[in-house]
Length: 364
Image (tube, rainbow, N blue to C red):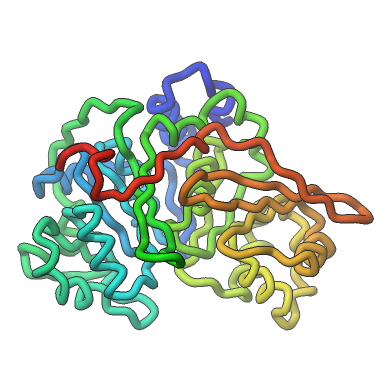
């Protein structure tokens, strides 16, 4: 059972709470052998919110993340619904120059990072720019066992203990996320999405798109700074499904997951799908459970689209301009020819592009 039938009838914030509390012992997040239930995920979200409040974080403060696809990234995705903060999800592959600009632009007070990932030392990188970021107070280290007790804090210390949680009053007009463009035509620019626009996906008009058969098991091999990745986690929760997170794309591991967990939807880029289809021995895997393939970040060639149709026999969904608009385009499944058609936009596709430093955001 999911909460789909209540969409449009129940306040979206209450709907999200119900999505976590309905079937609380069902699996929601799978990551590197760990299988986390909805109850466990919600407990971590609330523990993180209480821990950040204890550090002085308030409603409207910016919390930036430099994380691969991992449970901590999911916790921060839902954090604004509990803490009232503004989430700033960033590409963990950002260089120092772009990262310094973004953190100064959005005025982040907290940055959450892995202690190390793919050879990148984010704590050291952030340490070199602290003098240029007067508003940055804390760097929370996932996977670390110690810090300096002041600026660098282990994740486990922040979420541990029985800290009180004060729930703020939240409005649909409150800013919830600042998504940054890739910066291909200049410096990255912040795009503001409010809580009301984000929860438009919970309208009655979106019910048909949140079918459990397609969202029963969602495979996500890329970071949650990608809007379509965050969207996939969001709708999987509402539809009653689960999400498999991968902190780096590995086509062999993807094939294993699809076959073993009976994955129904995959999110990725065309490059990832190219690698998947060219992996030696991929034809031996049973991929018949896949009902939908979503892609973004780069164009999908007609040749690759045909190859995916031939191998998987499912629908392809293209998420384009998601940072600014969260719009989508779907490609239909036809037996003898390919036909591309614009999909009806999701209810939450209205947007407000702005530089995060301009007055469109509330005063810090």
